[in-house]
Length: 210
Length: 210
Image (tube, rainbow over all chains, first blue to last red; front, side, top):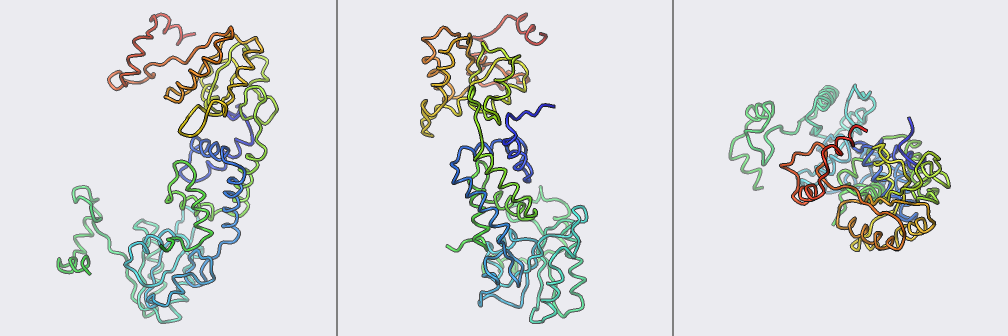
């Protein structure tokens, strides 16, 4: 079939953009035409910035989060509580948890989550280095903060088993009704767990006022 | 305020993606992390394809559509009707009209539309070259196929006035109720114009069966 694109250069650029998650061919064409309207300097900057990130990206030698420095600013911050580790999937989750301002410990970034469909097994993730950190001592609690999905549960369970030999408390984020959610629309699994894991009212009250 | 990004390299890449139309900072981060998971070859290909398009893009010397060759494949096709020109905003509209398989004439791509808000005047568009083509003779009809917006109407009227001195028929796409639309939900301007511009039933029938 004849290509609908009047130019191979254009088609190639659309193909590249259409590989990005959540971007279809129509959006890709719109994005490419937008780039074409920019001056060459802007397009060069776009390309260079992306390539530089890919080539020069560095991961913190301690928590494996993306970092410009050998040790990231969180791991290097002397005011953080070094006895608590929060295990997350990626930099996005570090940023989300930092925004809550409720956590003062350190992170451990797995760089993904166990997902047999995508061919990602425990050895592809920073799990051995987590075990090393715990083995080295000084850590009292590991908080598992992975997504509440099947993949997250699998990964949580694998890590939990790996950390069993060590004298460390392993906890997991509370599951429950989201703040602002109407009970009527909460899914039954969440609602069921939030009943089983209910907390004394005065404790919940303290959480909000502290 | 402290940057929420743990890395300047990462932040720069997110900033570049967030400049694209319709992409917010959250989507930008998702896209950047996706690129980071690809191998360096894929990221290089993405960057290079975009830069190559920007640096080597060529516009058809005849209709000004994007083209790999000096004259595009539509203008070079001897089976096309050279007496009819369809004036469009951009390559997207050429592709959309080609998909209908209802037009066998040639195009004239303006490269935009008159938009005072964006600082785009008639001189920024391929309007003078349109006049040249008409002046050169051989063209019997110019079909204005711009968006049915205020900017489109302004551009249509400007072109119409420019072409007045020449012996050429200037027509415009029919406005009316979209195929598949329910009358109840059609806006009143469209509905009003579709009543004023009503066509004999047997003519509408012929349109579908020819």
